[in-house]
Length: 273
Image (cartoon, rainbow, N blue to C red; front, top):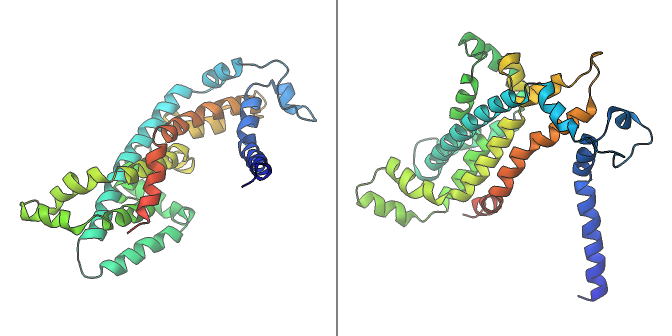
């Protein structure tokens, strides 16, 4: 590889990176603009006088901290239960034998092609009948139900663990519950990391669920931000929306940076049997 080729490749990669991060840079720039600069044309990339007070206004204009606490609570419940239930079901598909197991696994994978919007109305009617509206119980139920995609990841990972480890544990008197908790689950940290990131991101960014099942006083940060940043005429304050969005993505970004290595390893190892 010649030096000219390396320089050309580096320039191409740099251009791709700039294109990929340009929306993020625009979001940060917009979060520091005034309302007049947001409405100006042609638009400016960087404000003449950055307004860091937008972040303070974004927190005080809505119940930011209270809504963030509700979002964290829901995300924690959903992430924990979804990861554990998906791991347990994936273990069953990978290591246990039962009539119709393969057919049931095919049905499980087929549910991944069903859009969530199709089951929205039936889900609401069921939870309303069970008096679960304006509570956290819907996320408990969804978490206990697991995720078809995560079940597939755990199943693929558990299927690659040598059978000899399981047989040795059975000889020592360990049942399948003990095998799962003591042998399989401690070895599946890469898949657990992937499950935690995906589950947390889904629960943290969910808008439809909290808007349907929670009241305005106990809603999540996504709903509060979508409906709270308006002026006295009902028009959106886009600079505050941008400032709130910057703070909104920080928990997900921190979680991903903290578990990035295991997250990538989880996807690479789950496809190897």
